[in-house]
Structure formats: structure tokens, C-alpha cells
Length: 378
Image (cartoon, rainbow, N blue to C red; front, side, top):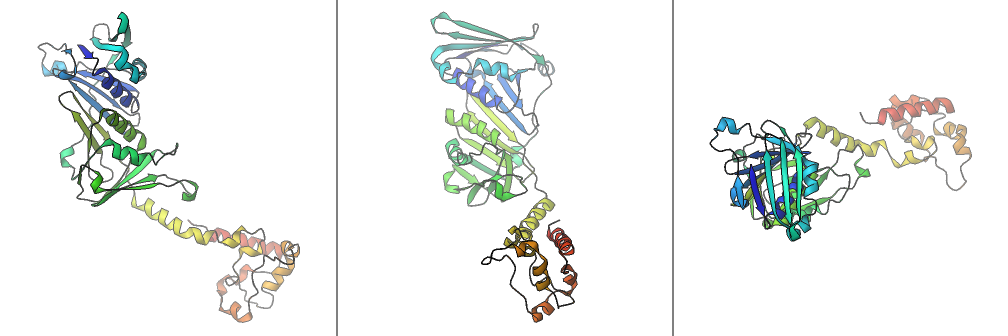
């Protein structure tokens, strides 16, 4: 295979390599009769990114296939280290100014990929990268079967994603409805109050086309979405997304005919009903688990007055107050003890918990620990 990229397209090719490098660690190259396909896949097999550069993208193209049949053509595939190719095109802004043409040569007998950059003042940079033959890399998807589709300019989504600036944020949720799109953070944290939650709403009028037949919520990786939108924003192309339900892949396509076209396929997270119900129950029990009185250092303040009744109503709260060391050391104006309870209120309480209050500091402390274990959520 021999192909030459002109100075007008070498910058776009370099941007494509940068976007592929954000997805996978290996670059799959597959020459064909009408062009070259450059693909990659993430290490977790959750993202697949592909570029198809047509023959019109090159000033000279020779696939090197000759009169081979389709079966023989399938064997002409190779992969190289992504980092080696990325180092060649690391200066995106200087490529268009300094590089006049880029020549790509695949030598199958030597197992080498030769990338030659012809720069100004007669400077020629030649890079030899070893490759290995590999099987076909192709994602299995069918965008025609997806009932929902959205066409958007990259700047609209990039401005919305700029609000999600957390360095540790890995996933984001897209909530599609018939009238708007809601973007929100997705963090699996036991305590939701410890993280920052961001929510951005986009109305359907901000998109070029908005066709939602089934409302759904899709959770995808934020890194892959930004890699796609960054490339589209630099070349000024719109993207079209096809999707159906959570668990099914979401497909992003774009094209700059007759030069090239691209496809990004992302796996979506499946939300199990039992996990959602457990999270809802946990959030509903948190106010009962941690009432304000439990923040007090006194053991007496941790027990609600109406629930701690005793079958013998003679020494209920008074005996506990007298034997608690913290209560004896409390300041005169700021006692942490609960208000006294009348004899009738004690009788109205739950008699089944009457054994929790005993006029003994050791037994009382053990009873309070038992109550705390019973109140914690399962």
C-alpha cells in the first residue's frame, strides 16, 4: 500500500490519530480498493472508533491489492502501537505550516509501516514502525434498528460538557425525553453528599434534528464522548446519534464526503432494578439513622425520649440522668439531656422497648449500642 496525503488534509489526519489515541492503545490499519480504514478499540471493549479515508482524501492512492479476490483481501490487515504513531503527529498546529505532504507505505514482506513527512526547506522525516498482522476488527451494531436519533453540532454538546469539570468523573448520563435532553453526573458513591452533582438541560430546539420515540436514560464514558466532539469541533462537522434502550450501544456517525467518514460505538450501562430500589431505600432511611441528637457526645442524647420507656415507670429518665458521667460534668446552662417525660407519656410509648433503659450506666450503654445497630439500614 502506498498513499500520499496533501498539505490540506494532513492536519485532519493528525487530528484523527489524536482522537483514536484517546480510545485505544493499538491502531488497526486495513487498506482496501477504495481507501484505508483506521480503527481502534478500548481496553475494556466498551468503545469502538473507526475512520474510513476514501481515495479522494489522498493525492495519490494505491491499495496494493491488484487483482486479489475478497478472500485474499481479508488477510491484508495489521496493527501498530498507537503511541508510536501519535508521536509523529503530536504537533497538530505545526503540521499544516511545516508539512507539505505525508506518505504512508505498508511493506508486508518487511512488516513495516513507513510514515514519511516532507517538510519545508527540503527536510524529510522518515519513521519506520513495526507492525503485526491481525484479524478483522469490526463492531456488531445496526443503527437502522434504533428508534431514536439526534443530530447535533459539536459545539452544543461541548458547551454542555464543559460544566462537568470534575477530574475524577468517568461516566455521564444522557436522559432523553420528547422535549429536552438532560445531562447529569453518574457516580456510584455510597454517600451522595460527598460528591458534586451537575445537571444541564438542553431543549430540543438546540439540535438540528431531534427524534425521540422512547424516553430513555443512557450512561456512557465521558472520555470517549469528548474525544469525538473535540475532533468534530475542530473540523466543523455535525454528528448523528442512534440509540434505543439502556444496555444497547449508542452509535455516533459523521461524514465529510467524499473525503472520509467515521463511526463511534459506545456501550451503555445497564441499571438493575434491585440496585435502584436499594439506593432509594438507603436514601430514605438516612434521616432516621442519623438524627441531630446522635451528634452529641452524651450517651443519653442518643436515645429518643418517647421510645425509651420501661415497664417500671418509677426510675425512667431520672435514674439515667443521675448515673451518667457526661450529664454530671455538663455546664449548668446547656444540658444535653432530653426533656423529662411524664408518667402518662411513658405509658403511651412502646412497651416492647422498655428494657432498653436500666438504672445502670454499663447496661444502658450496651442497650444504646443495640439500638444503634437496629436502626442502621440493611
